Length: 314
Image 1 (cartoon, rainbow, N blue to C red):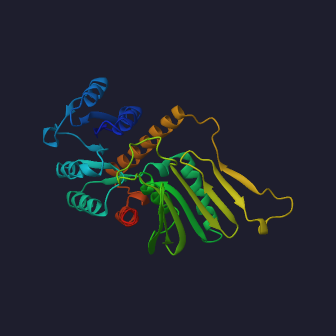
Image 2: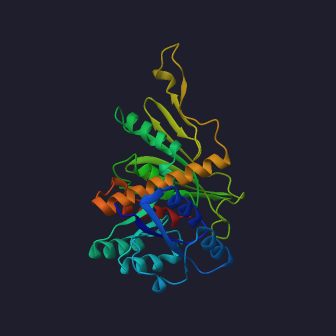
Image 3: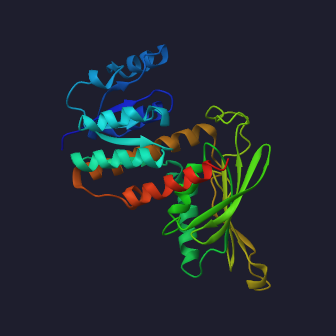
């Protein structure tokens, strides 16, 4: 099997993709870096021994797939890559209009277009999603409570969409805006939900990883039998039994997931591993035509549309 020739676009978060491609082994070949040409991007290209491209028009032929970590403002790059018959794995978040445009071009040219929500693929989130699906088999969720930031909101909705058949029908109302949180309440797939969302006062997100953010994300789902909580992107995931449903000697809470050995360095490696898996899913779609449920057009537009609606209330 010939290796996929992969272009990485951007060298901020893009460096995680660079490491993921390298860890993917001989099935992938790093074909270059597309960036604006800063000293940092020049150094990254030198470190990885690949060409640095400053324009899509300058790309050499033979690139199969692009990992595009260029932000929402750089979406024209995504469309230009698709126009050159390059499959695209795109970073989140993206507006519904952008996703629809990309899907139209990809479909017309027989290409694959994926959006990497990323956080749903981390171990803690996977445990939360699986546990939530199991509990949903015995009773529908009674409520959701979400604490997030303007940066993590899209990822939260991606996690919730993997639990629910659809995020629609939904309706949201802003109930307060007291710094640092805006509170939005309403219904998500007819289930009551409350969002507490931290947003930068000037309307522009803080830099990624800024200490000004008080949370990454926290999701609580209530069921008739108890409450399931994802306490952060790192976990733990806690199940609390409903007191009225437990026997006198039954354990009141349990850990569905924890990793007490987790450090910032280990988390970094796990995030790279999650992107290795995401690229593998994309590669399978390219080679075998297998579209995962979380990359169907209906799924992508559902998450993006819900995210954009919430964003309009912040």
